[in-house]
Length: 443
Image (cartoon, rainbow, N blue to C red; front, side):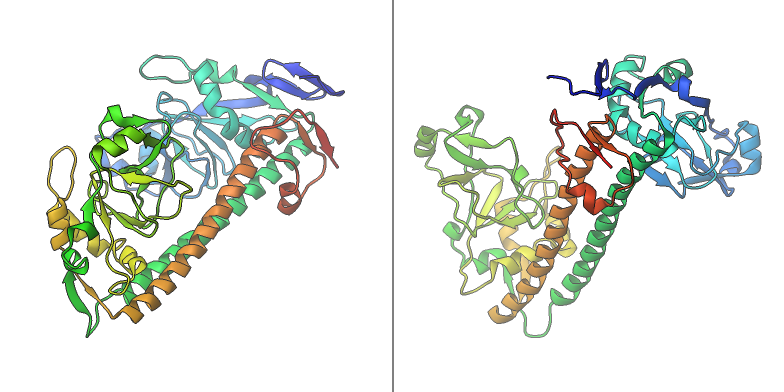
């Protein structure tokens, strides 16, 4: 790739000519880690001093801790309070994907255990929030490259001091970058809180609307299908030699979520010849698919149009086609997401390694139904709530992708922010998750 004027090629990649690659020790005035008070003295853990472990470093601002210690516990472990606004990162257990690269900023004064390291940037050289976003982006890669050990990988203090960091020339520019990324985080967090609120509202609506009332009729799952096997049948037994990368689409248990169809990148198919030889059953749009295999057994979805002419499913999935004159399938789909439904399923599951419910046992489960008109009314209300939640989840995913692009472009200087930009303005920039070779300066 041809370098644009004003950029240089470094080991870490292409960065602006006035940016530098420093070692942590060059831009930090201090490094420290904590300790674990003696576990044989349980009274040490009955205090009010926040004590942070590496499991609490979740790319977040920590405002509370799982455990709190006493003054005596802190004194025994020779712990010192870490100021609010301090950057922390995990230095042990880095062989695990959930720990490798994890970090946080303290939103309170706290102490830590020995698996956390606190970094103290030199004033005038490095912004702490910029450091946080840099490590969120590159921490996983740094751990892979620099940590030591085989089965249990970790950073020593010496290694941590030699980790590289891309540093814009002024704290002011670092602050603008950090603010932009923090604003993106805040937008995503607010949307996630809204989604959680909407889910709680829907849960309350389900409890009220799906609670059986006087006049609701009790029937078994098989009775609702008019006791007809062709309306309540399993998918097909498909062995590995029949599976290929094109042909007749195969829906597997992993495609069935709780109330929703889950499309996967790694799609499975079977040969046309296998389809004919095995006499497979074709799915229809609108079929209810009930997964009999954990986890959890009993989860179901209404099969949507997925752009395939011929689709089949596996033997652990029951294809349920009750008459639409008798029942609203979306109403049943909502029933199949309730705790009561999963409790009924759990009581009937068998197996040791892989819990599953038989089709016969599934068919004998009894549920209560209102008349068809009320089913449609309830299904419409709950489906509209689902659609609203899905729209918000799509929006969150969009902003997560934008945030990834922002990190890749802003933290390498491919797009330079000289003055603060609103999140709305930033979203209008070409922030693809995979950066292009275009470099620009936003003033």
